[in-house]
Length: 434
Ligand code: ACO
Image (cartoon, rainbow, N blue to C red; front, side):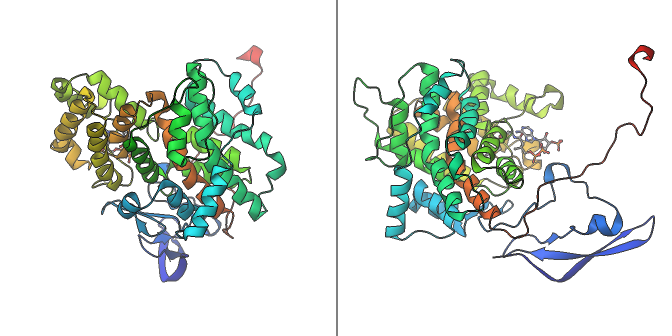
C-alpha cells in the first residue's frame, strides 16, 4: 500500500496577496486523505502551524491503521481482536516487522533467533552497577538500551539490510532480559539469565521472579495475560514515542539510540507513564466513596488533576484494546484469587465518569492503561516497572517503524519549523551597562 497523488487538488489562497497554490491530495488504502503541503513554503513563503500534530500526517506507513471514531485497530490489516484471541506476542512481532504472518518454519526460525539473542553482554552488568540503587527502572532501561550501540558498534551499518534486521532482533530479544536485570538490581537480587527452553513471556517472568534458592511456580494465567498485554501494546502507529524513534532515525542515528529515545518519550505520564499514574491515582483516591470527589476535581481545570487512564488523542469513542484488556483483568483477578480493593475504586470511577456529561461531551473513555496496571499489580509487578513493561512490548513496533523508515525512498531528516515570537534584532549591551 502506498499513498499516491490522485487528481484531487486543494487550492489555498492567501487573501493578503491573492496568491494561490494547488496542493495535491494523497490517499492511503483506507482512512482520511492528506493534503501534501511539501511545496507550500517554496511557493508561498508560508509554513503551516499544527502544534501536537493535530492535523498532520508525518509519514506514510503500512504497519498499523487506527480508526479512532470506529474504535478500529489493525496491525498489517489484521484486527487487534483477532490477534489478541489467536496470535502470540512473538508472532505479532514477526508480523509487524515483516509485514506478513509467518508460516510454521518462518516462525520457528524467528523464535530461535530471538531466543538465542536474549542474553545480555556480561559487560552490561558493570554498566548497571553504575546506577544509584534506587534509580527508576525506566531511567536504567533508557540508558542501558542506548548503551547497546557501544556493545555492537561493529554491526551498526544502517545501510546494510542484514545488520538492520539483526539490530531489530537483538532489541526484541534483549529488552526483557535488560528490563528484568534493571528491576533485580534495584531490589538487590542476582541477575537471572534467560532460559531458552521457555517462551518469550514465561522466560521474562522467570527472569523477574525466580530466585536461585527455589523453583518458581507460575500460574498459567500470568504468561497468558502478559502475552495479551504485549500484543495490545506492540504498536500504535505514529504515537509520541514511535514518532520520536522515527525523528531520531531520520538523522541516520543507530537503532539503539533511536529506541532509547523512544523509551524516553514513552516515560511521560501523558503516554506510557499513564499505567503507573493510574495506580498512583487509584491509591490516592483510596476508596469507592471518594470517587465522586475525584471526578469533580478532574473536571475542575484549576486543579491540574486529570483522570489518568481516560482519554486518547485518537480514540474518541472507545479504545478497542481497553475492551479486550478489561475482560482479561477480571480473568486474572479471578484465577489468581486476588481481591484488590483498588479494582472496586477503578470500577466505580469508570461508572461515574462514563455517565458524567463532562466526560461524555469530550469523548473521554477509559484507555488501555486504565486496566493494564491492575493486571500488572495482580502479577506482582511493581508500579515502577509498568512503563518498562510497555516499553518491552512497544519495542517490536518501534523497530518495525525504524526498518520501514529505512526502506522508504522519500525519508528526509525531520526538521519542523516554528512561528518565532521572540524579540526582533536588538543591539548587544556590555554587562557593565545592563
Ligand atoms: N481527565 C479530565 N479531563 C480530560 C482528560 C482526563 N484524563 N483528558 C482530556 N481531558 C479534557 C481536557 O481538559 C480538554 O478539556 P477542554 O476541551 O475543556 O479544554 C479535553 O478533554 C481535550 O483534552 P486534550 O488534552 O486536548 O486531549 P488530547 O487529545 O490532547 O490528549 C491525552 C489526550 C493526553 C491522552 C489526555 O486525554 C490525557 O492526558 N489523559 C490522561 C493520561 C493518559 O491516560 N494517557 C494515556 C494515553 S494512552 C497511551 O499512551 C497508551
